[in-house]
Amino acid sequence: MQAKRSIWEKAVWTWLPASAREAGDSVVRNFLLHWFPAKVSRESLSWGYSFWLGTVSAMLFLILTVTGTVLMFLYVPSVERAYLSVKDLEYAVSFGWFLRGLHRISAHLMVAVVFMHMVRVFLTAAYRNGTATNQNRPLNWIVGVALLLVTLFLSFTGYLLPWDQLAYWAITVGTNIAKAAPVAGEWMRFILLGGNTIEQNTLIRFYVLHCFFLPLVVLVLFSYHMWRVRKDGGLACVDKESLGQKKEEAVPIPSKTYSLLGITSGTTVHVKTSLVDEDKHTVRSSPNLTRRLLVVTLATLAVASILTLIAHAPLEEAANPAITPNPAKAPWYFLWLQELVTITTFSIGGFTINGALIGGIIVPGILVAAAIAWPYFDKSSVRAVGVWFAMERRRQNLVFLLVVLFILVLTVVGTFLRGPYWHFYWPWEHWPEMPKKF
Amino acid sequence: MKSWFDRFKSKGESEQAKLERIKAEILAGDADAPARKTSRRSFLARLGVGATLVGLAGQALAYLRALKPNVLYEEPQKFKVGTPDQFGEGGKFLEERRLFVFKERSTFYAVSAACTHLGCTVKMQKLNQPKKVKTRQREFEEQYEFHCPCHGSKYYGDGTNYAGPAPRPLDYFKLEVSPDDGQIIVDMAQVVDQNFRLTV
Image 1 (tube, chains in turn yellow, brown):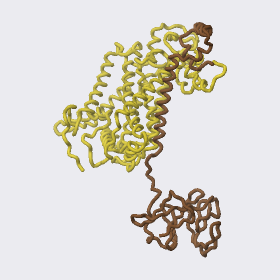
Image 2 (cartoon, rainbow over the protein chains, first blue to last red):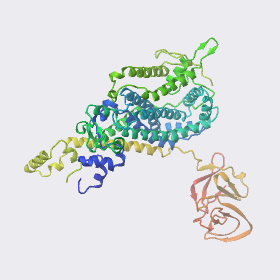
Image 3 (cartoon, each protein chain N blue to C red):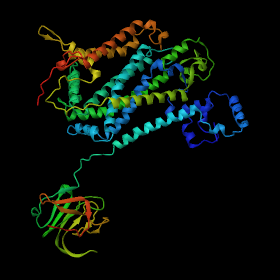
Image 4 (tube, chains in turn cyan, purple):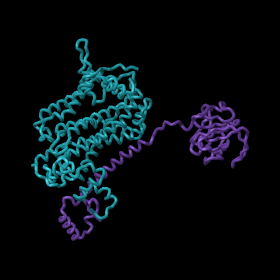
């Protein structure tokens, strides 16, 4: 601690502490750091354990919030003006093309990254409780599944807003899949669209969902997700580290596993616990965790910005309910469902199985239900928690990866190998000329 | 002077070794050396932080610039109001433009209906009997006045304010005759003197 600090030093000392004392103080004194632990294990910070996918998702959400807020000043959610205001963004507003492009690219990246984050958590068994008290990682896994679904729905509701052909027909396909749900399907579509057809009611509903309601849900769930991570003692790889140490009578010393909550769940303050050897395994959060966070944030922004310059956001003709583009495709992350809907529709004699029900509702429903329930059926031991491809989890990891592969293959087929009338075409085959209606 | 970036410099160097180094530098006759020397590490750190800030500032500027419209969809400030023969003697109120166009024999002038206090639309009151009025500019007999419904401002027939909170007379706008079809053009972007008259 220096006696007299300049204003600049007052502003930055928490980010660059000069001593162990300052490092400990900084997570307490700085609001932006208050949700971090004072010390964090080295492996939690490693690039190779978590790939920082959760952080990248959160940073993409931040980029989306900032760009989205600016876009809200420039976009008009009315059937007459939505398309024209997006056209203006693209051609008349300074940097409008960049704002829209960055928002779109970040949205697509977020869907992909959140999914990859989920795959990482499964393969490292990070949804399993370790040895610390009061852990509830299965619950956090369920919150994560909810976050994935909300992310998909956010992207989907954003899709409609430009009110061009792509948007209009993607939503037509998507909401008709929802209609196939038993009992509540019709009602769900009616409520979602605010009527029977995609009209002004639909646009304003999707707009409010996209700009206010769903981001709020993400914010609440994300906050809880982070709080749970802290309560569960950090990343799952920490539990792996504590396994290596033998249990001993711990004197009441301030350590990561020693807390008021720890006392309440034990009998005395001398808790039988295994303490992670702090000197060997941990580093101070400030500046080690914060520095890496900054690098990940900037890398995310840089990659998204560069991709924006490469891939231009498409804008087709204005929505026209009279002309369906051929083929009419949903957003890419739903194309595996569209593919499922197609291949699960078949006729037995005069009886047709409705593919929209099997491929659009039942299969994804089973997948989500299985994801939610799985942590409670998983019998793998505590030794596998936080370990990539643990031997004892071979079988379930294989099944999980097969499901992931199945989804990816169907996505690729639906995105790249389906042409007019949803016929199959190899990339080197030309699509037939389709007559244009006027 | 100890710079804040010296924190980087002393990394991985024990207090003892640092003292030894400084002592050696002082003995070598260069007392300011530790302060003036920029290590490669601190230079690169500054470069990184600087580049980051420049990048973020660039994005922020782009976002802010996007909020300044390049294209406006407002009604143009300059518009045609019809040929002179379409006007009868006296005043004509163009409601959506909040504008009075007056014809006196072969001269025309346009008076804004926006109250100079806070912009409500003034009402044209026909007087029961003509009223003799003397303003700083002229003396005349008026048939009508302009009264504002919002805060009670009152204007004589020529637009001069005489009661209520209005700070100045109603605006007069420039008129011209369109060369292509002979219609009268009002330019609401150009405020002119009360004595302005267009003679047709």
